[in-house]
Length: 323
Image (tube, rainbow, N blue to C red; front, side, top):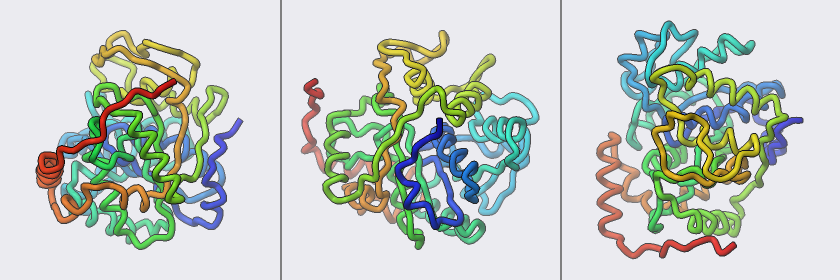
């Protein structure tokens, strides 16, 4: 069984594809089944991630290549020893040990909009990719800013606004993990309303599901467990919900007994579904764009977004999905 990506027709003439985690942390893992599927099809495909890793520490645990200090770096090769939090390092370590892929993961360390524009432009010069697939673990990348529950849309908005400046023909946003963002208090009624608005503008490309029979899902789970299993390992509160959902767990199920996120969960089959959108349309619908687009550092972007929220208090009322 293969991942039946609805965007394959769009990618038919793509020569080089960048799969990039949009929201930080473990989002690059959420893109791994897409990356592996495209790699198996013979496409030239690269990985990148909006990174929360401490690069100064990471260079003691893996090889680090610096293109733009503090803005664009790459990690390569196997992990030298355990580290509490280094999502990219554990992923390249797994890829090096379990695949025929010579692993390199590009990292954007906690960048602001203008910094990330600089990073994406430089990475485009290096890799010459003609297609970008931004991957969000969750659905808060679809937030417009007028929701009572927009989630943690800061990093996703930074990625969308920065990548929107790229002069490439195809920019796609893939979301997976609908219902996982409990701690962020995402309003999923508004998320569905946002999806409908994107579809009305012609920006919804379709959806597909991971299943436990898929080799790419099994590799995704193995890569995640490689990063998480063991003492004092940071875990993704998104993928630790996607994986059991694909296995058929339901309701208040926790993948790990030491799950630090003890909020009651509602694991459901919706969590294993990929939703694909036109990233340009998603960006244009984001109401905070003008407020953040000229910010340089992440702190500046955060302040600009918080100021925008403070000035726009009229929010869409939180509603329950009526079935």
